[in-house]
Each structure stands twice: as C-alpha cells, then as structure tokens.
Image 1 (cartoon, helix red, strand yellow):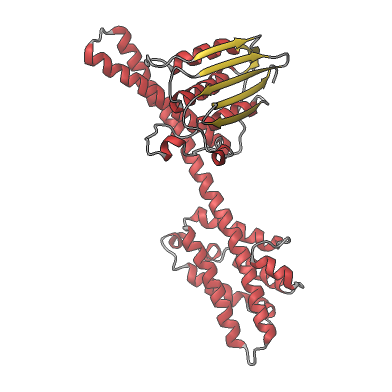
Image 2 (cartoon, rainbow, N blue to C red):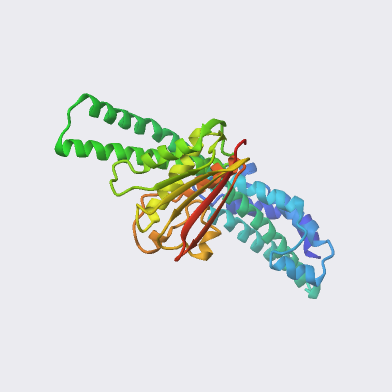
Length: 375
C-alpha cells in the first residue's frame, strides 16, 4: 500500500498516537482536552497525503528540498500555521511544538513500514514526499509560532513603556518643584540636577521604545502638521542638546525661508536625535554644523560632524532599530537604545521626505534630510 493511501486509511489511529504523545508535553498539556491535544493533526496528515499524490518532477523535488519550491500546499500551510499559533497560545514552547512533528513523522513511518510485505523503490519515494510535506507544515508552524512570540513581546514592551511614563513624570515634576521651592546648594543642587537630567533621558528612551513597538505592530507614525519655522525648532533642539554641557557649541546656518507645514513635536524629535547623534559621535562637540536651506517647495536640513566614519557596509542598516554603533564596536559604553536614527527615519517618512547619509574620514559624516513644505 502506498504511503498516501495508508495515511488516509489510518489517519485516526495516527492521530491517537499524536494525542498520546501530546499529553506528555507538560505543564501545558495538563489543562488541554482531547480536541485541543489533537489540534490540526488530522488536517496536516490528510493535506500531506493529498500533496504526495500530485506529480512532481526531479527539479521541483530538489527545489522543495532547499525550501525554494514555487508552489506551496495551501491546506497544509494553513493547518500548520494555525497549529503553531494555538500551541503558542496554550503554553507550548518552540522545542515542545517541533517535537510533535518529529514524533508524527516517526509514528507514520513506523506504522507504515510495519504494514508492508514487500517494499519497492516507489515506497522510498513516498517516504521522501511525506518528509517534504511534514517539513513544510513544520516550517509554517514555526513561523506562525515565532510571529506570535514577537507580537506578545511587542505588546509587553508597549504596556511597559506606557506604564513607565507615569512614575517618570512624577519624578520629573517633583524634582522641578523641589528646585523651584527650595534653595539648594552644593551637593544637594548637583544631585537634583543629575535626577532632572536622568529623568529627561529616561523619558526620551521610553518614548523611542514606544515608537519602535508602534512600528513593529504595523502602525505608522502619527503626525499633526501645523505651520512652523524649522529654524526656531533647530535653535530649541540645540539648546536642549547642550543643556548643562559647556563644551557643546554647534553652529546653526539658516539660508532662505525655513518655514513649512510639519508636526512640531515630531520635527523637534528628529532634530534632537540628529544633533544628539552628531554630538555623541563627533570628535569635537564644537565642530557640529547644522544647516537649513529653504527651497521653493522644500527645506533641506544637513547635520555634519567629524569623527570616526561610518563603515560603508553599515550605512545600509544605520536606520534599522537596535543597530550597534561604532562606539559600541570599539568597546565604549552607550546609554542609548539604538533607536535615535530609526525614529528620525520614521519622522521623515511620515512627512513624505527623504534622508541620506554620507561618511568618510576626510569629509566627515553628513545626514541630509529633505522635507516638502506641505505634507
């Protein structure tokens, strides 16, 4: 009997063994009934059996073995993906879920081989086709499981970031009130200033984390455009970046009309991150140059600094979240989440603008942003 026929005729017996094995996967299986334990096993087996009866050329078989097959089996993929999602939801870990497929494969081969009287070459081909089908189902289950893990993590981070805002605001407001109502001197004043700066930095990190989570959950950056002057925003961003740092003295050059219709809060966020990045990685905090050039339909912003150039192979991923920067590669600690340039790119995209970066040892590093005056 061919393997596809054997699976179709004995599917309930095979699923019984699947259920028996799934019961041993604890503690998740303790709270599951028979229907949950047998979840999608029958659908996966019958879809695999149907796939095995379809013609397949040697080249198609080789491509499928490499995971490159142009055609998938929709019913098999759907059952595998659903199984992966549900196993994640009931508490199986990834190793436990994949062990079900290993056991299913072994069970089917063992039962089928035990039923054979005189195997021939076609039977070995059946085994190959069955293994291919199970591997496809396993791949879909693993992908769906991983997606659920990522989504659960992102939701957790969103909740954490949201809940951190309230205590941070309480610390910030209490420090502000203390410094206004009480005359502090010496070490007490220094400690209060440290708390104030640390709280501000933590608030920025929490905000960046929430923007990352928003992006990963598939939500675009919301903006509320309004008339504003980017030159004024740049002055404010420089003052914010240099607060409490006497060595900080970037040069701001404004050419032409830098007014437009943008989201003031997002533009401030973009400027602070770009200027802060230049100050952090520049060799001299006084050599940072911020230039605004008003053009008829857009404003061109450049932020330039000298320092260790960005490696050419790193430029392609520099706007990706959580990318390690050059300082970290050199063993220098960083207090950043690595989200600053990612946020900059999100702000630029939300305003339908463009951003580019060039970097070499002679000319330094320049970030160039072009934003249309009306979004």
